[in-house]
Length: 181
Image: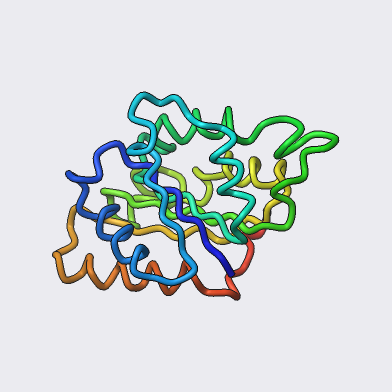
């Protein structure tokens, strides 16, 4: 299985968590890591190059820090232009059908904050539903998201272990799809 990890972080140098996760993923075979903000500092996305990259892989991982219960802005822009009608969806838009989509997010807050009866009132998978709906529209299998909670509280050693756990999870060929309610 060939895996594409699209890293959407606007400042990887300053990032502890996403940089650590990405660097561990870069050590793996059959994995392509694509630093999207570095590739497009002007946010002028090469749509054809991105589409070719997606077509060459079986599993697509969207890795990003959770910003205001959502994605970084370049990921939204990337979706808007790369997942085009007639290519990713629509009557002839079947280029991603059957591929797997995994969302991998990091949060500053702990897991306890993401529940119905806690501070944020929602779980992370609930807040990621727009990406699941996008996956449905483009014909990918939406895998159960990987969430790294509480990155601000993790020691360097804990973060290194989390990166290893991330790789094990993201490259597991038997990941389950996230159930729809």
